[in-house]
Length: 360
Image (tube, rainbow, N blue to C red; front, side, top):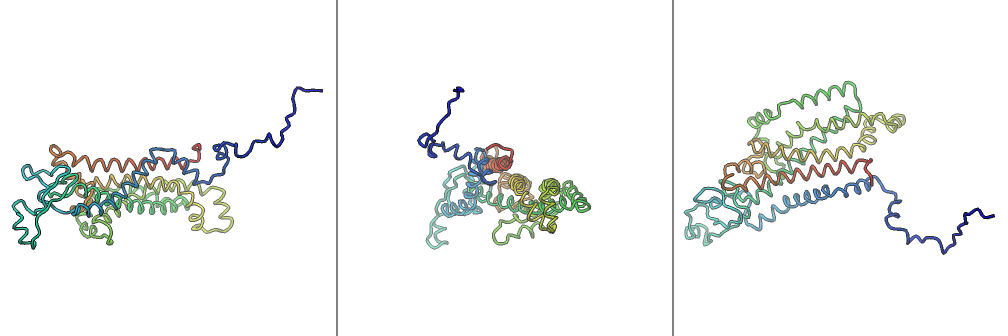
């Protein structure tokens, strides 16, 4: 008796070959690891990906482009040119200026040749013009200023995040009096008069601290990195403390205690791996805030001191010429804006990528 439902007989010739399965469907069933899922979510954020390319370009321009262009142009960022200043208006020369390398306006080729054994005066190029009254090359000082800003931001981030991880782990894991002491210390650091301390430190030990370079850093980088680390660790510490307070009650921590694992081992092997995501995200955001803080202090004359190049001290000199040479404010201001925007977009993209609730 027919039921109206015909049996379907699938023979070998009727089976769908593996090659016929769409590539998207085959990829959909593929098992993915945690970091692969993070990468897939991150690359879908076009602004975050663009910010990564900009950050890489900035690093190459600062640490590779600076020395390369210095050799090409034949002078450094701190070289003083008398003709880098217009002799009539006393304002810095404009972009793409070919200027004389004479040490002073009255110097002639004959005098120069007699003193320098037959060599004659030449010219040099200032691609973006001069930076102020000393006729420095603005283009090179922007590149070397990027080195200074990135060094301060990155080293201060490492110090503040490292200290914040230690304090946050201790406070969140042990709780009790340890949490109380660290929490009160955080509150003290938060309300401490940061600017007054920097002014006092600059007066008392500024030159000595600025001279600490370890042979590779620019003058003043160590001082600002140390100050930002001491007064910036409370922010990541509060974040880490909050995460650890919830993690310490999880089953895997209880299981580790049952096996006899020490507190140090639990914090290192069981809690710290779960903190990688918030640490990476907030580290990028801290870099952006450090760049702005360095520029602000240097603008006030409390950060990187001349003749060391810094975006902040470039902006400090710019207001003197804002009517005649407005680009002196535009270029360093644009560098600060784009750099902080890139790091903030990068951090936002990482935050979304690490969110397991985001759909693939």
